[in-house]
Length: 141
Image (cartoon, rainbow, N blue to C red; front, side, top):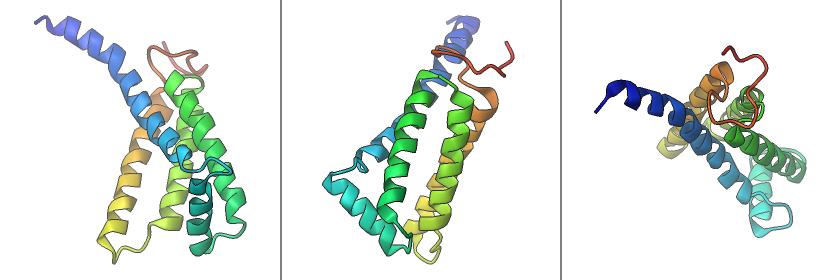
């Protein structure tokens, strides 16, 4: 196998696969927050139980952020901004919902959120790279 071919193909497709996996995570989360569904009611109830005021408004905003930024990240349209928004959103979720470290499951969720944040920060620095609708204007060729 020619390593330079492997490297070029990998460098071309890996950023797209990473963006699809990261963005898909948020689109799956948004599927549970579609306003008017049972999932929306459950998500709003969980947010209210954590003490979040006006929970249904926040869940609706979370739905919009996850859909818009998730799709933007996947297609590579303003990927840097989308990744940064999703990183901040994920950090906020981790700090609001997953700080009971005496529960190992909650601690695992917190660490999982940190992993998502790390990947999103990487995209926020390097942009969509290849196979994108529109590269970010700040991206260096």
